[in-house]
Image (cartoon, rainbow, N blue to C red; front, top):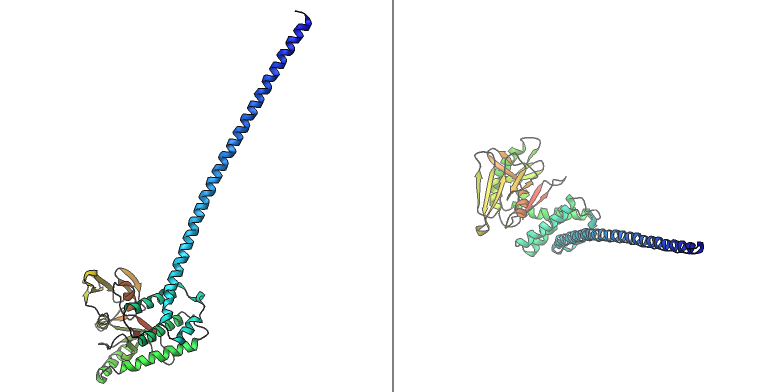
Amino acid sequence: MNHAHKRAIACTLMISFMCQFSSYNVINAQTDTLDENYSKSVSNESNSSDNVDSEDETSDLSTSDSEEEESEEDSEKEALKIRDLLSEDVRTIFDSIDRKNFNDEIYKELKNIYKHFERFYFSNDEKTKLADLSVLNLLDENSVITNNKNDALRKIENISNEYLESMKNRYDPQDYQKMMEDSNLFGKHTKNTSSCKPENVVIASKYQILMDYPIVYNDNILISLNDAVSLLNKETSVEYMKENSNIVLKSNNNERGDDVIEISPGSNKIHVNDKESILNNSVINWQGNIFISTDIFNFIDENTKDGSCRTISLRSTDTSDARVIIF
């Protein structure tokens, strides 16, 4: 083999080797590119999945917030139904108040008052007067009446005075005198006690009088347990617990079961069907008689199967004593 022939063979082998090496690099490069693209694809799919989950969670939160807002709006609309029962002048006062000043407690009480009027029968005139008095007193207690405050207070005074005059005429003069003497005796007991005129406990829902004298403690009117049971208008048993000082009232509702009310002298806690509430004043045992704050009826009305009467408590002022309207 001559020198020229050997050189030709060497060149051929070199070219073949270079082609194989180039092909190997191309394949590796393509593989790297595929691997990189696959990684990016997986990463994008993961991010996309995360975004979907995030969107779902955001959607759930948005839906929850929306449902809660709708629930609040429905509750407010339900509470504002009481407006339809108001007289024209009181409706004007009611409409002048910015709804932003109505807190949850106000809405709750407005709703409870309206439900009470739905549950029990009142003549139209009586319903209007009691709705006016209930709403104005509630708004005044919460200090949300500003523009027409004097008109509101005047309306409260006029309606309550009308009831007081009518209530006093129900009592026999001799019985009335005896009740005042007993109430005055309690009123002289401590600096936190005072007497209460019988007519200051107005029973607006029916023609009825108190059997026992009322009293005032810390500006709250209290009535006897006997009178409270009588005003429930149900067959109610009274049981004094032997193992403690608790007093249990049970009202039968036939097939709907019993309503159970539990109180204790010296305590302002009341349990109505196991739901605890706080009375304006502690239950008092005075000379063997149990006296209860009249707001007990509101808790019974809200937490029993058939409801009860409600109360409007008017605090004493410079011109009038504390009084309560039971309806």
